[in-house]
Length: 260
Image (tube, rainbow, N blue to C red; front, side, top):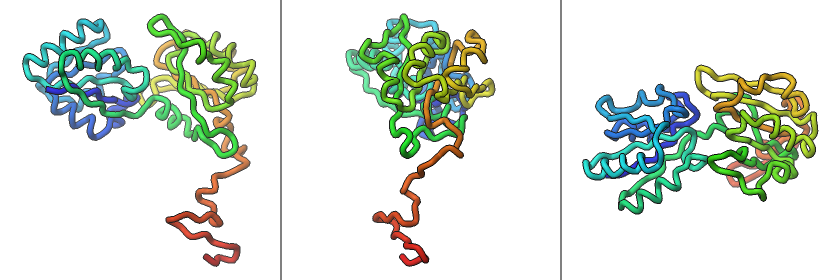
């Protein structure tokens, strides 16, 4: 048997990868965190598959399910929201699987930060504005963020900053970022990107808290802070990639007058 860590994507059932959907349809035991993975994603599952919502299970209880699957020879689809490599708590599960001698495979998924950028219609890497995206999260009880990765320090880069899991700490996050990014820095909140309950709020760092009720954005919310969120009309420099005068191995340059 084998365990497949499948990235379910941001929530829309058609944003799971073809490979992920195929494996969901093939495995007979499906483990998923119902607090994060919408039931709609499981429409790809085999109708006879056993489905277990792991939201209320601790690690030992989940490992017991893997052990049972080994004894019964069942392939397991372990479904995670977004991409399993980002805040998926997969490392400890993989360690347990190695101890049990169970092979596993990771199937990547669409991350919520790219889904949020799509909702905003934004490119987070603009020429001469920022070419770096920082993915981080607010420190919490389950997993504190190392002090060397504190938000004030990360903000000094002036890059696009995507803050996961911080909806209930927005006042503290904004306070940490204001001193570096400044009050006019564009920001966006996106909640449940790609799902029917999706909503967004676009503002600036200085105005954000006065425009929203923080409690309404406590769960499944991404905060994006970025100079790249400014209006496209403010784009002063464009990429040379599609400049007619720019040549590369796949395209010849065109001079003024149309000569190649």
